[in-house]
Length: 129
Image (cartoon, rainbow, N blue to C red; front, top):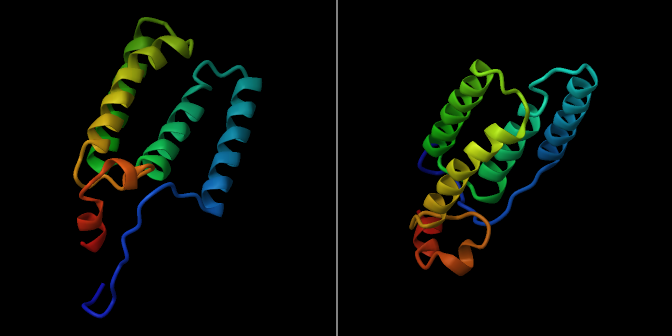
């Protein structure tokens, strides 16, 4: 990006045709994995759901997304190691991580996700760059 090209920052919920396509593809893959009786079928909607939440709803920083993803991999691996492949134990363990990531992001002065206009008094500073 050069000095004459300016990227305009935006706030709020985001949704594009690509998002719809990815969510539909994920739903199809989830259904197919479930029909094939793949024990970890539930990881697809879990990851896609959080990707959507973090990238479209709460606009989470990349480093927080990566921390969440790393902890999710550790969480699932730990449950698989003890032969627990049902969806609900890892989801229950991951829920506090998800909540911490979202709350941490929403409390930031750079928060620009959903409801940012209501909860971030410094939003205008962020949007102006």
